[in-house]
Length: 465
Image (tube, rainbow, N blue to C red):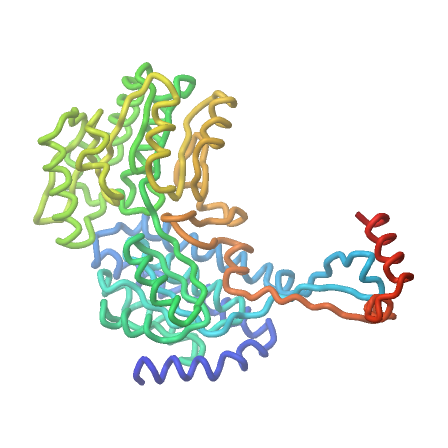
């Protein structure tokens, strides 16, 4: 079938799917859960290894486990989340009741990225289907082996009118974006997010944009900087920094710099040994284009001010760039012009907290602001003087693992939320319902407007407000 035929099929079927009992959706999601716990898990592990060298443990931990966690959350809560909810009705509307009821938006398009191609494809899809929507999934062409296995997996459980994976590059994405959908969910770069939003606007299609940006970290003079260095080394260089919520750059109080450097060095030596580019647990850069972009950025930084404290080595044959930490490069230099999305980490020292806060204020709102501090006053000050999709204190990345927290950006880092109930509502229309049971007040307050009615209105205003 052509793209347009599949879209038409799903648009025709969306009402029928929405009318099916919740047990049907739960059954399908449970089938997917069983598949991910069975033979399909190894197929996905092998595919991701072939695409960019991600190891078996890391794939199961960061791709399969959170997908299964989301499935468990959805199937456990779907009935509760789908029930009508009674809301308060003001006294001046006596004789009536009010409710809200969630309903599926209809046919949805999910465009997912390459950095976590299993989780970031199946997570929004499972949520969309749980809400009663049909879905076309367009995973990244940069991880073709994983996309092929995902296509086979989805086809083994869902009918084409319910869900289908379409594989292709920019031409396919363009054709899909020219088509009308009831909701588009996109995860990727801010630049492409603008393209998605512009295309959606032509059809007045609502969007969820999970983007990124330059997420800063502040380590103040009260922090355990050695511990912070170890935690940030893990958070930054997992997946070779190819994570939208990875710390992009760090501001560390100058009194804590040496402790921070010690923590980073000990952690990286323990993780990846003396030659990270030869370590099989260290992930490749996804393709030559991204490798060349990052090495150009690193080479440009080497010509600027700043100390290359760690790394600075690249292996073109294996598309690996060693974890690289640069101390005090220019704040308007090569490493600060765009989101890094790779294993390069600029670190800036400061004396007064106003310094990093002023610098952050000049940039677009990030996806996350990370804070390492024991000083509650400083933590509150940083939160008050920054805007971001999320804040995480004394830990990085793990805020995403709490499905009870909404996940998403603000402004250039994203629109809309995912995760848990918030993600479910993103794929729903919350429909208002108003029921008039008793004598309607409009009979009293309709024309002709007599002196008596004027007196009644004045009394209502005085009594109620």
